[in-house]
Structures are given as C-alpha cells and as structure tokens.
Length: 125
Image (cartoon, rainbow, N blue to C red; front, side, top):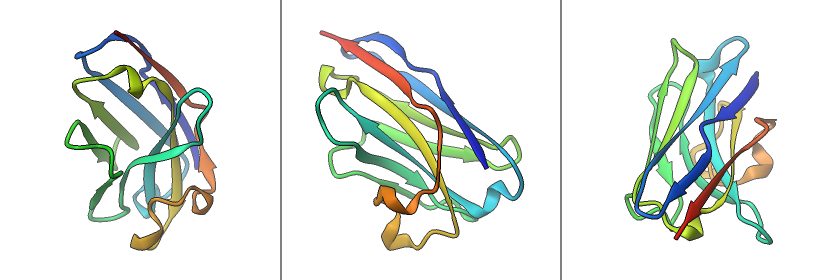
C-alpha cells in the first residue's frame, strides 16, 4: 500500500486542522492506519490509530480529546482532526499502515511497514 499525507499548514493557536491520508493498493480494509508526529528536535511519537476491519480507535496519552481519527475504507482515506491547536503541536505528521496489526502493537512505529511522506503543521502563538 502507498500512502500520501496532506493537509498541513500554518495555523493560529486555538484553531483546528484536518489532516488526510490517502492510500492506494489492494485490501485497504486489512490495514491498521496510524498517525505519528515528529516535532523539531524530538523523537517521533504515536498520535492515533484506527484498526483494520471494525475501525477501533486508539490515541496517544497526550491527546486529551483534541484529536479524532476516522477512516473510509471505500475511499481509502484516513483523517486526523486536530482541535484547539497549541504551539507544541507543531510537527511533521506522518501516516503509516500495517496489515492485521495486533491491538497491543498499534503505538509502536517499528510494526508499521508503510509510511507516507509527512505533512508539516505549524502552530503560531
């Protein structure tokens, strides 16, 4: 599967952004798709994931209700809605996919074998 992330840009603090991840290839429904982010000078961290099949959602500990992940298997799309953006949300956001991923592995980037190119979100204060 090939992934393309887009939707980043410059946003004022308090605003919102909807990131998109489009996928090409077969059997998209069989893939767990996740968002990770990497802030300047920091390690990449898990943001959210939506499971293959039934679409169970998972979120990183820092999310605190400001992020919402969703998917459309027919359109082969995954979205990440980010509300109440804060300057510390400034990062490159990556979407990633893995087929039939175990629930306990959803937050571990090494289990994702397909990655998009990343989209930069910059939040101004």
